[in-house]
Amino acid sequence: MYGIEATTELIRELRAAQPTGIHLQRRNIETPDQVRDLIASLRREVGPLEFAVRHEGGAETPNAVNDQMAKLNQAFAR
Image (cartoon, rainbow, N blue to C red; front, side, top):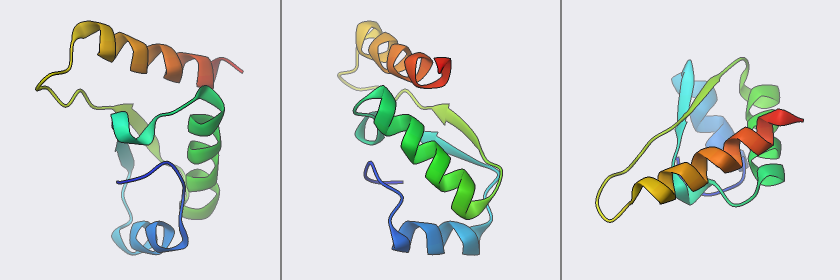
C-alpha cells in the first residue's frame, strides 16, 4: 500500500483482493490522527482488517522503528 489516505482506487483494489490484514510502512505513517483516520476509513470501506507495522530494513535504525511504533501506539490509545 502506498500513500497516507484511503483513495477510491485503493479501496476498490482491496475489496477485490479481500485481504485480512495490511502492513503499514513508514510511507503510510505521518501523525497519530492520520493513522487513526486511515485505519478507520479502510475498516469502514473494506471490512474488518488487522494492521501491522513492517520494518523495511536498510538505513532504518531501531530508533526509527521505535518512532513508528510510538506513533501507532498514540493512534490506538484514544
